[in-house]
Image 1 (tube, rainbow, N blue to C red):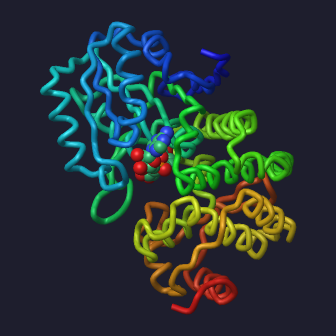
Image 2: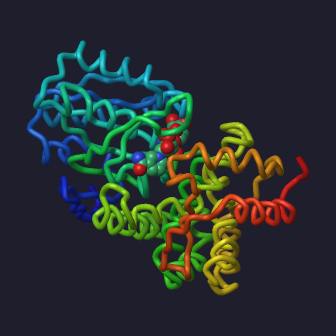
Length: 369
Ligand SMILES: NC(=O)c1ccc[n+]([C@@H]2O[C@H](COP(=O)([O-])OP(=O)(O)OC[C@H]3O[C@@H](n4cnc5c(N)ncnc54)[C@H](O)[C@@H]3O)[C@@H](O)[C@H]2O)c1
């Protein structure tokens, strides 16, 4: 193992480490053994990740003395369902996984959310670890303990809080990520910079070309900065009563765009980046944030190579989609906004104001639907 950086997470319910470094999957067995005395483990992964890293990780776990049962699901959001969770749970029972045993999630956010959810409910809860292999999973979904599956009514509508024993993020594994998945992660990295402060925004903008080209040193720095930010937030607010809401920055409109355009037609990160552009403008208009906010964010997103999506200019449909989100409180849609980079404010926005702002925004930017 080349030198890994260890970041500590401390929430009211658990303390654990996030390791970030290169070559960590090859050493994963020993790293996991360091936090678990389990005899057996269920290695939950998807077909793509299994093909690339399954043998490496299984072998390393076996070498560390775990009896490994591989549970492989189809790649993509389609596997984050109640039905698939049931199959994974049945497979765990078939493997006679016991209370002292372990679930290992190897893959992106889909596998992490699904496997974490199964670990939360199997035998009323067994331990699990996260081996995230997408940029999004490394900087966002693997840290913080939110797990779950989608329901027909919407994404992430059933789930549990369940903190892992350890998160092992091997940045070398990011080399094989398809470009759209890379950009999804970059949008979250940019979000973390915006939530951290102007200095981070400027540093990332300077490094953007190298980051887009996946230069290892720059990737490592960016992952560490984003993870550190996520840790700070979830440590302060494990259950999303306050600061954790800031992580929704860009996601309110972003999710609505994904839904209205049809899931899969606008990549998640591109939709989130678009939501950030809107949120920055909303911040300027509702919070009096300086015009530099949207401008410097636009420059960052452009430098990262995250383009503008086209989606139907259907304000009513976008509003409906936002209402279906969990972030509605007392009937009013809440936005995570920024008074300035690094200074988050949660703002309930009335429907008529929101409709007007969306009209303005879509008039300026979208194809006519
Ligand atoms: N729990 C949380 O706090 C949280 C936060 C943000 C997002 N999420 C969830 O995360 C999910 C999205 O995660 P994602 O973007 O990682 O998607 P994903 O898990 O579907 O992975 C994206 C694609 O990349 C492939 N892949 C994964 N690692 C690879 C690698 N190293 N090389 C090549 N291909 C690889 C996968 O097979 C998949 O096809 C969503 O369901 C979202 O709701 C959860």
